[in-house]
Length: 384
Image (tube, rainbow, N blue to C red; front, side, top):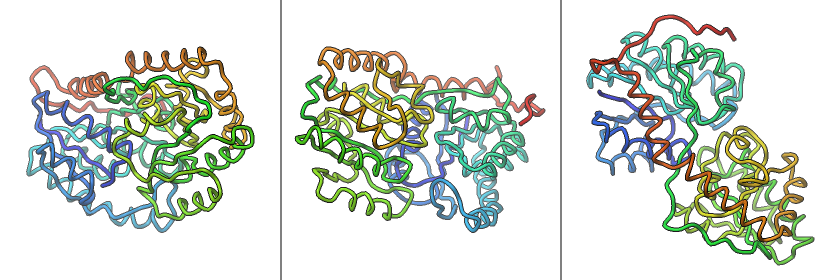
């Protein structure tokens, strides 16, 4: 089977890391895989290290999250050229399946899939925020009669009405473990950190505001911000740095070795306002680092408050500071129990092997007994 994986970004965010995690599993199934990316960058370099062929698409650049009218018009203008390029790649390489790793490239891929009778699978890693985008993606799912793989129920919810129930699959992210779990130690005075791309939805400003409040009660605490802007400019980073002035906050930039970062933390904070299932939470589970997070998106699906981590009462800096203070004064035995349950949850549900097998099985089930792929006709039974 020949699979074309289409990716909408060239940088290495969470969705792109999930694609890189999956590619070896597809290769091990004996399938021929090639990857189409919007330009040269860290992702294309990582794909080439796997000795996979790459196609460069001219996708244009767009801001992450909500789109302006100008960007929507630009995207509509680019669609025709994208569809032509994807069609050319599919025909020249006898592609049997399109695996779309993000919604931006779904419309041209769905059109080509419909025209050439090539099955389409969309892997959705992020929430679709605008009604117009949801409608466009939904109708493209119908056009291609596509499968949807979603990283959580929350992310799948807007698209669910457009997809046949048997073609909707919830697959939580999986991550590799570390050589040994992070040693559980007292979180007092505490080295508290946030890890991830720096943008408003990830909550670095709320983290800094909470740090200022925590310091009133725990003046010896230290704070670490790990990450960089990936899909946007540095304006938000500048705001965070200004808000951190005078506080014991270290900016460590982007770090590839997350295990090493976690080994130096006593508490991980995930104050995302809109998120699916952040990989960093699962990495903290595997590293033995306690996590406190906003109860947004799919986070409550993977983190159970008081059992495998801690959720705030609201998505505010004040609520975050209160929960951090609770953890810093928590009996050590109680904190140890939470960390141990989180590690067990990772082992049972969120390993890299589990993720790879689940997604590969879904792709494999799209094959008929003779090894060729089929496309069922018809529309989803549920109307939006």
